[in-house]
Image 1 (tube, rainbow, N blue to C red):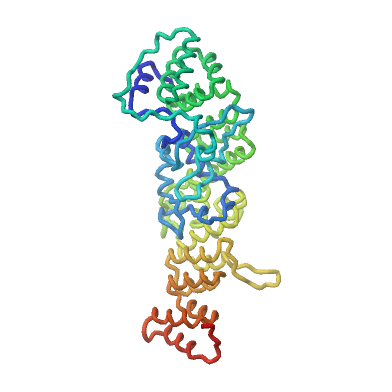
Image 2 (cartoon, rainbow, N blue to C red; image 1 turned 135 degrees about the vertical axis):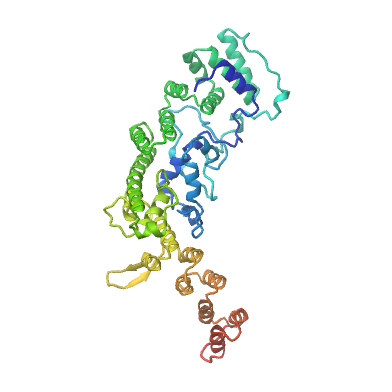
Length: 472
């Protein structure tokens, strides 16, 4: 979007526009949040030991277990690019590195989730070791304190460049932006690019300004001049956010696959295209099944939102909710999605558990954790930890007997006792205290059960047993 002279002066004088600073609250690439969620750095799902990073789906918009990423949030923001500016839920950042043969931009830096729920890694975090002097501080004075000066008297190239040098030396982002607007209007594109290339602070401000004003054409020309091929590719890629029609968006993403991204980012873009292609097929089929009214799952649980443009993990949750028993050969099969996108076992089990527990399909939950060895013996195994399984089952109102079965599978004794006490799994607490030969803890728990209850009778029988050698 090119601005007229009047528009540029309005931009400079209006208090709603601010020059770039390190602490701004609006990420320049936050409009990529929709696609960031869609592919979400698949290899980083389970790299962190903190399993909370995995909990990001709920098709109905309600928490499942400790899962916090709701469909309601995603569906409400995926349709409009400008609205996405409040997303990434991080601090403002912009490209701060000097030009290099290969770009330091990485799609994966936008796709990775932050450790704190509801927020994501920004480039300002990734580049936190950049010297503070690389950033011009914002002048935090009200508009009325500024004195607007005409720059028209600076006519020669030498005068204009000296003006720019003075603006940069003042470390005032507003002044730098004003001078850059003037140079953009009065210099040819080739000369402006050439001079900015050797003035990195001004160049960074100019790139930020072009992104803020939406001047994509000039920004692309600048990246071509600087030979920043990855920035060029990324700038083109972000244009998919302006395409609302799913088929047209899919075709646009297809054109992005051959762009000069890094090898890792190319894989992310390919995943994004493949995911949307899948979602279009699933959406068309499920819309037909739902309207026909002959499929029980859609009658009992009408869909809350379209699956189009949803993140990968949400798509997996949807598949586990509506298509759990489908064969691997179908696009909507959860196993098919797991293999296609190389979803780790941890993420798959957590998502499937959330979906099946939401439906109270306890047999499916049991089967999810049952493994069989080559001798035919079965055992329970949970890659996410049985304490997490118990939490999610409890949030979904699982019967007490099911809760007790899974609490008993928690290996750490202290964790087991805490969970059993919290969830009133009396038998687990009583049996654990007996096995630990902890008479005092069993006596203390006796006061917490109902008088005359079966649990109280069981505790008394254990306390009166002469076969137990108590340790206290």
